[in-house]
Length: 255
Image 1 (cartoon, rainbow, N blue to C red):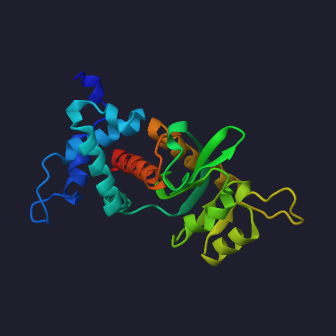
Image 2 (cartoon, one colour):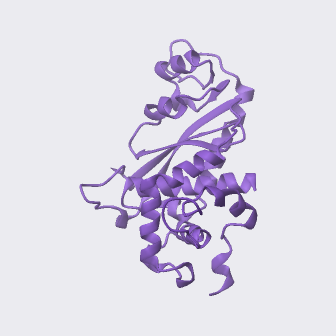
C-alpha cells in the first residue's frame, strides 16, 4: 500500500496515551486484542476520507470486521469513555458555545424507522452540531440534532453541570432562560443582547473577542470529510464520528 494512506495514522505518543484504556487488555474479560492500533487507524481513515466502509484499504483489515467492531465499541460506549478520560482537566475559566450546520449526503437518508436528526431546508437535508469548548477552544460537550433545531434550545444542555466563570455565545443565545440559567450557575453571560430588547444588557466586549475559539473548533472538526458532510445513516454513528474526531483533537494537544 502507498505510504500516503497512512499519513493520518495515530502517532506513537498518542497511542501510548490511549492504549491502556482500550478493550482487549490482558486480564480483561474476553480475548486479547492484538490489532487495536490498526483498528483505530482504520476508523481514522474512514473518517478522514468519508469513504464507505467497503472501500477500506485491505491493509487496515477486512472492512466488514472493522465496521462491526466500530459498531460494537459504539454500543459499549468505548469511544465516549475514551473521550471522557482525555478531557481530564479542562480549563473552564470561560466556556464558549455555538452550533454549526452539516450537510447530509443523500446516501445518509432512509434509515430504518425514518431519518434521524436531520431536517430539510432550502439547501436540502441538514444536521446540526452543538458544541461547547473550554478557554483553549478544546471540545468538552457535543450534542447533535436536526438542522432546523434552534441553537438556543440546546444551550442549557451544553452547559449543564459545568462550573465556569463566564459563558461566551453569540446573539442567537440571548434569551431570558439562558441568561438566568448562566447567572444562577455563577457564570457571567458574555452574550450580545438582541437588538429588539427594550433594555440592552451590558457585556464584556473585550472578552467576547475570544469567542472565535469555538468557531476554530468547528473548523478542526470539519477537517475530516466524514464530519464536514454527514454520510452516516444513524444518529449514533454520526455522534460517534464526532467523538472520534474530538479524541484526536485532544490527543494532538496531550501527546
